[in-house]
Length: 205
Image 1 (cartoon, one colour):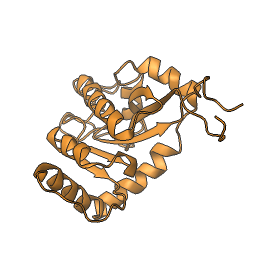
Image 2 (image 1 turned 180 degrees about the vertical axis):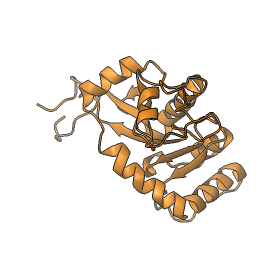
Image 3 (image 1 turned 90 degrees about the horizontal axis):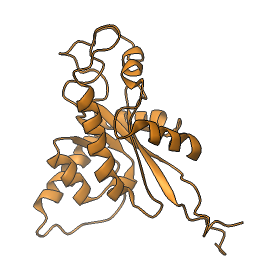
Image 4 (image 1 turned 90 degrees about the vertical axis):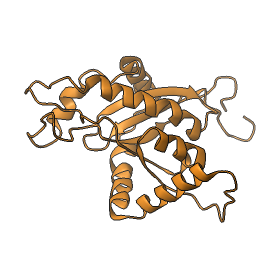
């Protein structure tokens, strides 16, 4: 573009197991798609991917995936909105979404969204919330792959835990107590995005 900006043809978004760093789900979206829109597709996909692996034992005969599925989600403030937090709560998942400064809000006629926003605020200011948000920054943003590699992962993932993820979850947990009754991996999913390919019609030369 004339102002030097580059419009992206797509963006890739991934849900990452915060405990092991294994990629649980990858989705691609149009470059103009907002985070509050894309998470509505990626989080359910992550939940379905983990649910599909719950009964799958690892090579050591243990269960690497959390038997209760995805129970918590951790994101940056780009994903924050009352509607999103309300939907996450409706799905039975606890949110730890960083909250941007918006000033005083009017909640008339929005009791569910108000309750979800306040509950999320309490969680992110508590000890566990602060720890999870810090871990998200350390473990999910740093290893984000480039556009080409992410596109390949998207193709491999196909809406499920990518090939080898169960083995990775088991091997990288750091302990040998992954029985069906334990928490296992993929109970906490962090969200991160990576840049997509420039739109050839708008890329700045």
